[in-house]
Image 1 (tube, protein in one colour):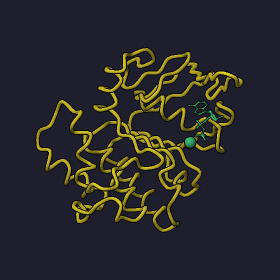
Image 2 (tube, rainbow, N blue to C red):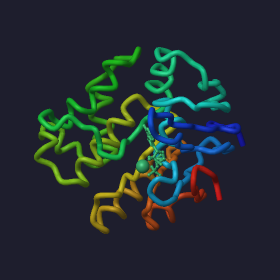
Image 3 (cartoon, rainbow, N blue to C red):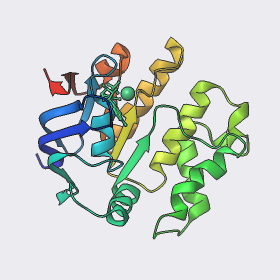
Length: 222
Ligand SMILES: Nc1ncnc2c1ncn2[C@@H]1O[C@H](COP(=O)(O)OP(=O)(O)O)[C@@H](O)[C@H]1O
Ligand SMILES: [Mg+2]
């Protein structure tokens, strides 16, 4: 199987004045095959978000190599990183990061501003909202939505540029158990379209949906 994500001896050290260095990722090696659905589990502070941000090209490692779709992203410029993020990766961040006073439609449009391909914008936005089951809420403002509805909009926004890879940071963290199940099913459906999925989670239900569960402790795989 072809690897779509590869980490080779990746470390991330946060340095701040007056406090000890924090080793958030410690010499980590990880391979994720194309079309795989993996869950990364670990207690708070174990390095899950740091790992997801590095895979998602939102941050870069202190040392080691990161390959995304065969491209070495460990030392790319910010502009080139942003391009890869926009074209290859859809990210669902922990707090949704949606604009509350704008509609679902407007929020899903945001990645298209940064995309080279702006063709059929309306169709692509509506298709993404349909896929995540909130097309009927396209014109509703985010602030008037439930947690589950917001999560569906955030996933639609991650899908709008048709990325190979979807990353999500604790996507069921704030949801009730019924909605958790629905969102887990949604990731499974997105995975069955051939997209590679990496979710960071505390949620056993979501972890069970994945093909493979990876455990992380103190920045190391266990
Ligand atoms: N920007 C940062 N500056 C300094 N330390 C950080 C920063 N981000 C995370 N950390 C530290 O790195 C470790 C891993 O954090 P994180 O990746 O957020 O873990 P998790 O998502 O598993 O809770 C923690 O000790 C955290 O305090
Ligand atoms: Mg986290």
